[in-house]
Length: 243
Image (cartoon, rainbow, N blue to C red; front, side, top):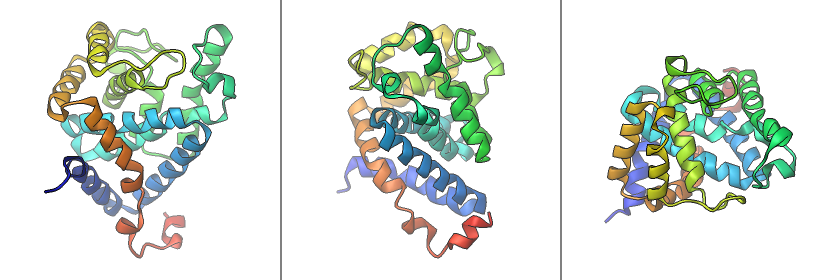
């Protein structure tokens, strides 16, 4: 009998394989995402752990709302915080920041977007970085946009990012919350999030069963999703360069 976690990851791997074979540009997108994610992991393992889980949550939501492009939501989650790579340790070490340090932290959104734009990453990937801290009621940052100015991928990213951050177990200034506590916080802030996205997110966890289940899936993802040889076959470096 197959492990249920392995069974749960199979649809993601199938989507990944289809994404790679759809067009040559997607190969570059995957390699760029891997390089950025690995750089982030080496610089700040806590942020990369959060990013991986956010990518999974965003992907699972996208399968319900934008299925044909769901894989790009996963990669968007992986690299949405890549702008933090150049930040000093005192910004990244988990302490709660105030004043100028808090404003410096907010700059990671612009730095992430600029990096992804320079690599000509897909619009969904860029928008996840651009809008993941914006809120439906205009209370977010960096631009304070609201409502339908925020694209679907931004609305999905906001919920996935907040849930992942709240439940992260090693945040330094605050212990990770339980799945139930995270849901209470999200329900108490409903005006900040798209109601349909939030509804589907709550429903999704009835199917997934628990945060531990998703944590197990996330522990397999780097090994599984970035074992490129299985998917790339005979694709040469030259074909990647000419993409």
